[in-house]
Image (cartoon, rainbow, N blue to C red; front, side, top):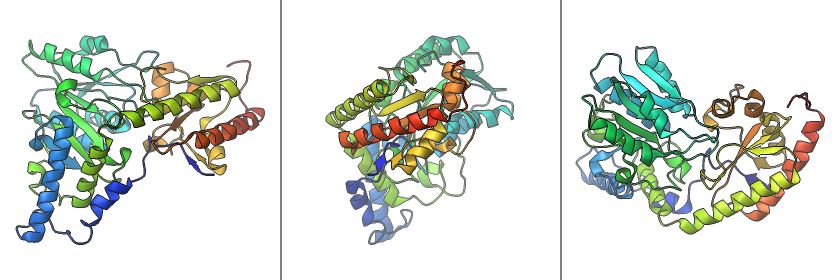
Length: 392
């Protein structure tokens, strides 16, 4: 049996999504910038897709910018605002547990004179809004806090943070703009941009059943932002390059499909809880990373004491079970998880943690198979573990 428990890294393209896309590879292949009938057909598909997505977010069509990935969207949001706001030494507030698309972008900007505050999460992996309030300075122009952490699945109080920033802006000359990376939240949580009180929001297609290679950035009207890719007037001049029509159609279809999915979410959460309970019952000294309650329904990030997470992942892969040690974007790095380190300040925990993430296709039979293999692997690996069990 093959069991895939890495849906937080990527999901398969849904059947309905592929079917919606197919004709735009073959019959309707026109360039949406062309004025002939082929081009107009492609332009119609892009416009209709944009409208579908805008409706999902409670946004205007003109506020949706299509990109090639969540990482590109994060870069555009952060670099775009910093480049557009003309003040000396602008200040960004973010967290120590952001996806590298945010944290590495902020680090790059620091080298060019931008000030950045990286907030530490609490013991549940949550960034408390009060910490953001205390970090605000006269030159603060941007706050970027992810909606859901990609490794430990904790849900941040984005709505509360947004309302806090709106309140602060009433008494400020320099407005603060609020961006959230919602890549891991899109399928499970409220996404209305007015409800969330945000100015910019990132989505990635391959996390919700669309293909890899398509993402978007929502930018609230009036938010100052400059493009990162020049060379054409596509996306209202904000992102040059011929639109990827088929993938845009696929993204819109995937977003259409995740609406009204409460039953699916409830089922995934039930299976996730079953998985965690069985693992902790059958295997000693296994601890859940992050908040038990305030997390997405598909995430189970577990710390197996005395073993390296990488060894578990590799061993399970040989047995047909796919999981990860954290973010897919850092899976080839030998560095311990920056998220686990920020929350727990424990290199053993960072090295010994594994992320299991479920999808709507996951079955109890698959989980039972995975639990059996995990138990076997942990027992074997602990026997040969170099860790001193007396010290941890």
